[in-house]
Image 1: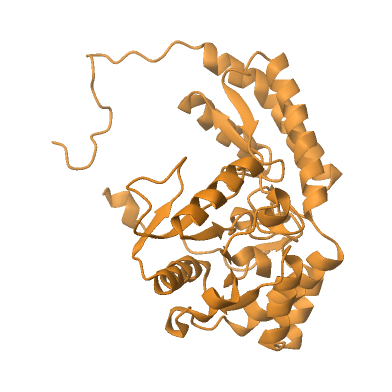
Image 2: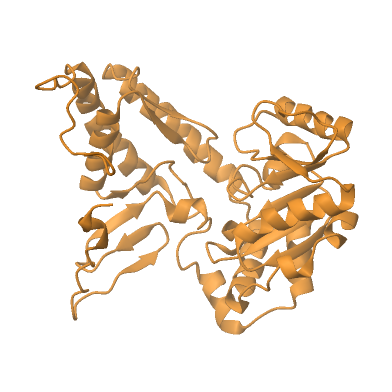
Length: 345
């Protein structure tokens, strides 16, 4: 690893504006404003510093049973719920519960199928984001045939793709589902939901208690989603964005280089060439957009933000087409690295 990896960040400037975030906008140390289309990887579903969430955090912690019921009520079928401190703890805990319930050891992540047979399978795990309902129904049948526990990882899809999550969108009910920071509007938390017998099989030692602020934020976020679901609006905005960007890119002759794919509530850029991706990243940053990968729309985004993003694509599409027409750079002497990879002389 190069020395630059260990270079300390410059100290924050003294005085002047402090970084802050509100809704879908962020301000840095210089006071420069940017539109956030990352939203902490999609976890900030309602928007930064949402008033109802912040008020709930200031008011104190509700009874955990109340928050458990609020999450269960949003799902298509009544289920048991347990919380933990972090999203990363929820999935391992769910897998271990499946192992205890089935007496088997092996867990498989679904990737178009399950490799290695079904006889010793305790659990099948799938991220349902973007999966077609008939595909998820096929996974459900496979799990049933194997006597395995079907686990949905709804860390990203939760209440973004549908007001009842991917379960509501597909009509397929998993045995267990895990959720993350999105249910607390970005604050750290994890949750396991599902059949009561499987929830009872969870090891309490696998589920450290969430922070009090996170539990309060979850209560407010779930109440807000119950009163005013975000998913229908996110899907409508995403569909408009995908259609308009597709039209702009096609008109510029760059549709073979770039497209937006995936669920409308999380349109994801795909690039045919890395130099086009680099141009896109620089161009978006230069136009005041915070983008990392997928466009994580939130309830705080509205017409002005979508219009600004579409305008950025209108400016960038011809440049992406031009970049795609450039011949690849020729090395001076065959395959020569300009920068030596770590570990090579």
